[in-house]
Image (cartoon, rainbow, N blue to C red; front, side, top):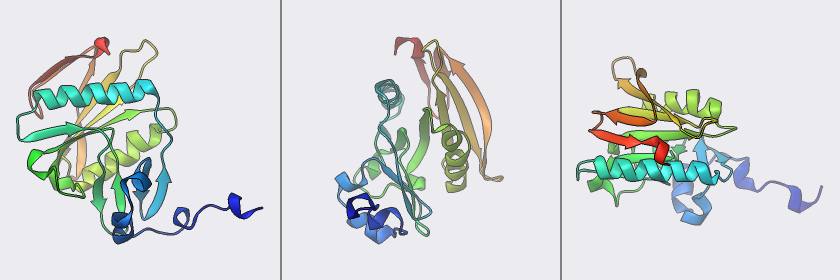
Length: 188
């Protein structure tokens, strides 16, 4: 084994919040930190990225001026051990746009678009982490063979610290929470 084949130190040593915060945006792109360990995320498909952007744009347009919806936002779920997740879409308080890191108390809704290889993480692990962090709404988007995604919505039960099932949408998402929204998924 050559030195080129050995994983860099940061891939097998726990990362602290201070270390992560000292990294450049380029170093943080394409990774999440889970229990202090770097998890490299492969590039998503164009369909995945388009769906996430479409949902972010629709959520941003429907939200009141107090909320922004964006893609590619780190959310710091816990400091020790460090856990940063990068949901596909984050709806966060507009007045926190310049605050880094984004914290759960800044976030209203997270959306994860499930891809091959992320099924268990998006359906179980992240859902539990977001609920534990107190994020009020979670949407999971499943891509289907016919091209029209299914959107599963969940609402936090703060007393239990877990999400309760909300509505499931295909073709048209029409909901009043977290704010009134109606979008056609077949137009993607």
